[in-house]
Length: 414
Image (cartoon, rainbow, N blue to C red; front, side, top):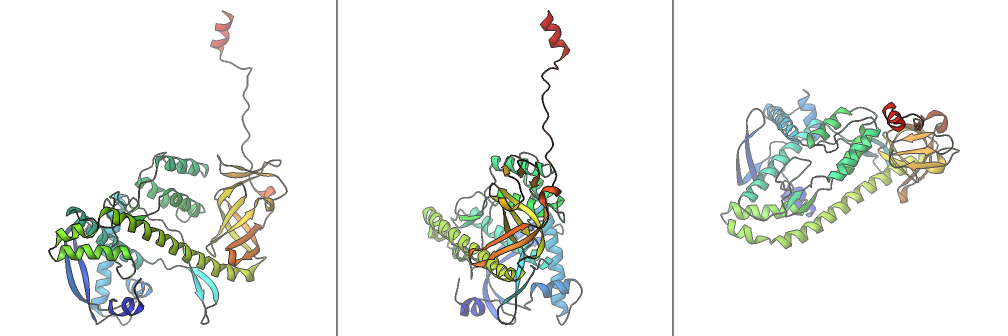
């Protein structure tokens, strides 16, 4: 958001350089429960700047050239983060793990491969600390009745959760028709490292509303937080900068001014705008990553890959390729010599004549047929004869009209 001279220099917490900051001091019990909070304008001098990979190596015992003070601090951070994470999970916080992929570029900027995104525990350490700071600031401003830009995530509609439960039942997974947050996290944990993990995570994600910016207090469903805002990244998110402005007024003893700084209609309009631009930015980032991966797959036309069916429609099947982290489409006509019909109730494609079935979450070897990077399109075909390998729908039971309860027959004779 800010020019590089500011975001990477003057406003960056560089080692050995003093920087003006706003600090949230949080004290915890050994079990990760919050004991006290304090807010202040401060001057910080960072001890070291580590990548997530470096921090992970230190936590695993590879301390390198880092001082004993830094190593001890990292271990304390891990201990506290795990306690906070445990407490927040018990409160109902959802953790969706989607298996993100990173594009590997050579020195000339060409795509040469795809690898799993780093998901080491230092990412969770930072996430837990940021969430706690955001909750603390939101709680403070709310307590003093100061209007501010909240980060909200509404609770899913009952109809949506009921449909999720019905779809999961088709995969052999039982979920209450009106599940609580804790039920959803138990579900996500139960399918971890199974073939249904990705489709289940996608189904749960699609059942959740999108988090947005707004002044109305509806809480953050996925984080199990009744009050929440974005505070920790003022150099790259406008919502955080707005929160810093009202917090500054409070810290300097001008709470009355903070209450008048933004009106509710102003916050509503700005929230709609920055929510929209956030979504556009996320879509652009994902589109660029997909295009780069598809450029790589152009050299792999004809190659066979393992896939998982993640979406079914009347037009065909969307198949996710775990190795590359992208989805491709198998048109209905490419499934095999039959007339395939979409059964929405059972979430499957059924061959009218053979009764062959293609189901959601089904593992499916596929072959790359064509790649269209500019359009973001990947055309696939089954790498096996689908009709001979898929299971059949259970036969429908015919009603036996001739058999009636004996009691009825007796009454009829009378």
